[in-house]
View 1 (cartoon, rainbow, N blue to C red):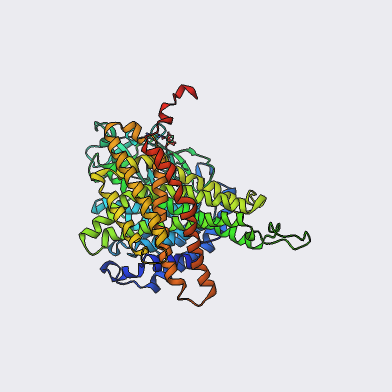
View 2 (tube, helix red, strand yellow):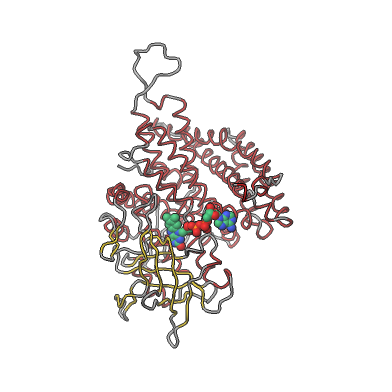
Length: 599
Ligand SMILES: Cc1cc2nc3c(=O)[nH]c(=O)nc-3n(C[C@H](O)[C@H](O)[C@H](O)COP(=O)(O)OP(=O)(O)OC[C@H]3O[C@@H](n4cnc5c(N)ncnc54)[C@H](O)[C@@H]3O)c2cc1C
């Protein structure tokens, strides 16, 4: 049983709010039309419903096993992966001359969100393959592109990102995996151990292309000495077919709480046999290259959280409409029939909070995907630079906020479903465990907060932050011309407070970075609340304009729902920034003042 993001929700965000159709005016997307976009979305919806949702539960019940040295996955994973490849989705946004569909990212992100909402544990295989292929497309040599991209985009090979080591998780500066140039050939021999590598071993594809961070012998210490290597599971013969097994071997599987369909592996490189790696780009620039994949993956993590949040919300709404229990506080007759629980104000509060969280998250993810398109294809260099700046500052929020607020939505769905929400016979408790991992995927939320406050909002004299301010102010100005003016004013005041707080923290950082960054997590929460308020105001303006023009009651109800969720965000969530801004502005040092010994 699954609950995919409904078509109307996607259409509202894509076409009404983001005007994705306008992208067809740009040369890169000139072959597309709204009908063609819809055909891709419908194809993804069919694959999600038929081939992903069908084994979501058994993915959870039977996690991957090792049998005679081979990793065996749920039998549903391979048909789902193959169908995704056959539909062209692995190369959805890649260049046409690389075999891609050249689809706007905003459309491919929406298509992938459908797979995520059906079964994130299986959707990770395409997610990682696309990310790894895009990184090779961006940073690889012409030969590397010709060798690795066709089989990856067609689903013959899958991809991974292999960064983390037992002693180097958040701090990639400390990685120890080494690379030694193998004279006279142009390859390197890699040795070391990587842990937590998702999709690191399986047999759903002919080969696995690991993108590995390692340190070339004699490299400078820290992040300036890290290089990037392509390390295939099988070396290739001259004709591109699989040759001998490379020396990357499975150390073991890790058994985690969610996303159980995805194999989580410990991989040894060069432990028994030499492990060949091919250098990508220049030596010592590997971390900068890897950021291409990490930034894409961070938005994808937010997208999977959003997909799961939507799935849980869909289940909860359906349940709340049909489950009859209790009577309103003013019901006098004990024999009157119980009402559907959606009639109770507290149940509606939980559903409204969930709707505000999951649709706010979808708006953020699709905004980021649209910015990826704008960064490459907007008509002027200024617009492209502005999109790049906005992406810088929004990416840590896109990774983090959906992971937290969609978790709250899933938690609410469990509560709405009463005892059934906690039972494994019903789908939401699995979503709760699956989504919890998104708080650690692609760097912990704490590390994202440090990135936001310590780098993104202050770099280049706050250029990215100022670009975001300008974008939000434009929405406020247009909302001020509508009946939503009071909310526009409220957001204007919140924006001013956030800007003043950011400026104060920026100044404090120059003097005492330890203290200024101590509450970065609180700062990220404030930033997220303001950004979601902006996105909700923008959705509200659109919904307000549309509702008066429709004579279909159901469609009008859909727009009213958006307006209600917007009002919820402004009444319940946005005001929470005030005490947090006060705490941040006085550089509260409660945590720093707590001696580690006192625990
Ligand atoms: C299910 C799963 C899948 C994963 N998939 C992959 C994958 O495919 N490829 C890959 O390379 N990695 C993968 N990872 C690894 C993941 O990126 C790391 O777990 C993560 O970066 C944290 O590293 P760590 O586990 O070593 O924790 P640590 O770095 O030890 O962190 C522990 C805690 O300390 C905090 N902390 C650490 N340093 C700081 C600091 N400087 N300031 C403030 N707080 C700090 C962290 O926020 C965290 O709360 C995966 C992890 C999981 C659980």
